[in-house]
Length: 174
Image (tube, rainbow, N blue to C red; front, side, top):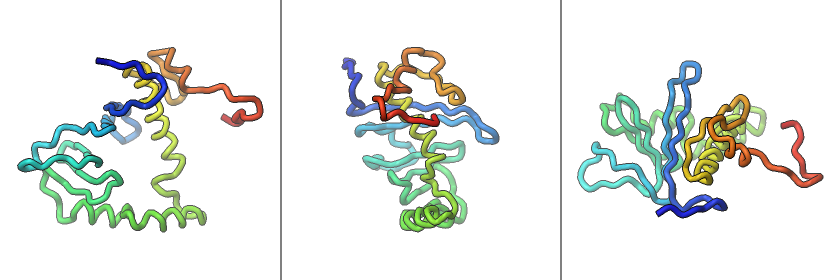
């Protein structure tokens, strides 16, 4: 049974994002499971092992990587790992959880941008906002033209991408 809900995010949902190839990066499908929904447990996990309540799973052509919600304790399954563990590789690249604050402080002092830089976070926020628009419209597939900031296949979706601001609260420069 479907319940019409056009005022809040649902208690549980699954959203599929399809990102087109860009430059040397191939196309990417991302599945977001929310509200205690999870993908099927990979067959590479032995016995009665279940996926954690929250986490990440990256599925590639040569295996899978499981990690916690913040990418902590990554482990490779379904492939022969090289001599270095996924966790050690992540720490070597400065992705360790304990390094996050130091990276942020260095960025605030004019150093290299962090992985949470607004230039990276903006497109991620756009993608998830489009997911929310799709859910609001009953889970309809949206095709988004990022250069023109418009949904191209469902005109009614575009009303949720902008808002009219009260006088004195307008945004300029957008």
